[in-house]
Length: 435
Ligand SMILES: [Zn+2]
Image: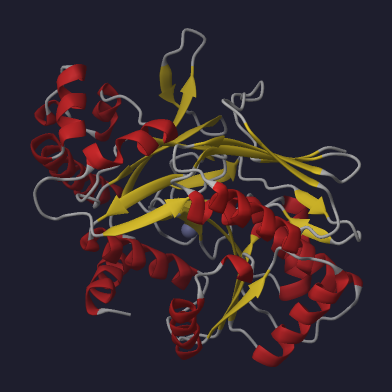
């Protein structure tokens, strides 16, 4: 871990215990700095402020930020060049996310923002007793979508140095599940980080086959909604230390469960997180505790290509504003919804995790505007893609070859379309399994 990340982590270790007023004051100071910077140096936001008839000085408390418009995923897609700062710090890091809604986007940020992201991540993982240098098993995306050889080899070495093991969680047939159990026995991870529902499936296998011969291994669940039934299975398979986390490639760790296992603490030092409910007249207001609302994120330390009021497509519930049993005053989310990926079945009856598609679309963010995969009752798959001008034969070949390798033995059809309609709830599901 680099020194700047370590410094942020130590700062965050302290701020999590501060009184709420002190935290709020610091958050508002960060927000003001960001808004002034965006107004002065970012063409997109200069126009946004002007169109809204608002100056940064008009925003005196976090609630005032509602005077600025929301930034949709489609707008994030289209506006990247214009959202880059024309003054330092510049956006030197670029990342693609396929998200939970089937609209791949590219986001950019500066190095300082990266240090904050890493600091927030390590503080949160620390709540799950995971320290840098511990042996960690990632139960994650498929290997064939990893970078090509030279870079991949380097990453492989780095990972061994960092004592990380990556296990593909997409193929979940019996042979693969048995292999994963063997990996756990041999590698003896200190902690497991798993896609929530894939972790649930693995745990079900461990319990059904009575394979557990290890003590408690903390499991950090990520990328998908953690369902109560999956949590119970994971607790049985790996012990009671199950930690839900809420993150995304856009802003890293947004919220994380602590030892009290009662909601997820929001990383308020790095983000301003709103949960909004839309009234009948179309106006939006903050959700009351227990109400489900849409998540809106402002990335407080990303000056390189600011994300202000980004509606990321997730839904969440907030908790009453009370101190957690752990003693931290960081506000909490009760749960996060809308990150479910269905499980597909291949031609041989093996399970294939639905996160396959978001992972597959990662390298194609410039070529694919939106996608939706449907597995029909006869197991055949229809993949609909709204292409960008960059979509070409190579993109098509990459998709088809990857799918044929991963979802073996089923017919796959790829259709280019102009539009993928949203469901009645307004949410676009990227993967649908018809039953
Ligand atoms: Zn807590």
